[in-house]
Image (cartoon, rainbow, N blue to C red; front, side, top):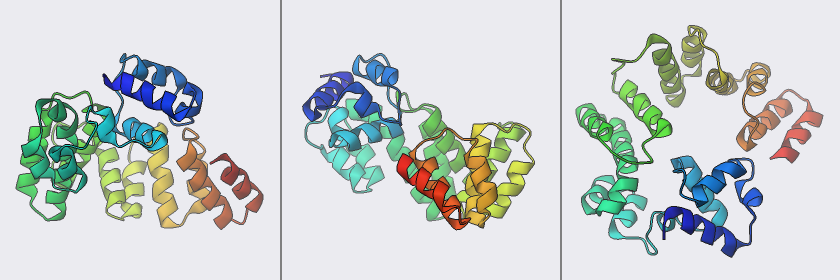
Length: 240
């Protein structure tokens, strides 16, 4: 079975239409493309589908039962997981394992090892190593102190994400205000930074500039509640 066939089989077994499974997270057209193996899912999409269909991610990766590599991955043994991977597993799991291991190395202040892992990640040939994981890898490189070969505007965005991840929302706002390009991602980061700084009015205004998804509605509910606008808080609560 291909990944698309597994998604289709799991959806039919769950008794869901394409529209019901897609929900607000992905489009029906995207789900159709996935089921026909015309597109590869992002990590977030794969996790969303697994949660909605009540299946482990390993099921969609071609493992009816979790292999030793998958079991090691799910228990946080990133290096062990990479050592045990078969060729098909390596295609899907290796970039995730390298990212997780690099995060762990950074948390343990083993920066040179983290840099080597991230360099190894750049050599991965995997459908999952797309824009989403590349951005996460870029943020990790920034946490290692490397902003080389990154345009200044992009570096400011990454610095803001890094500051926010390190619980420094005020620094994140400073980096964002220095950036020229202010698209949806900028508004999302600014909203999160202001939210964690306690500026709920400012956060609300920026959340309204973001694509309206469940997590945005959740944030808007909190902002409105903190601002005493209980009617709108209830409105956003119903949209989740």
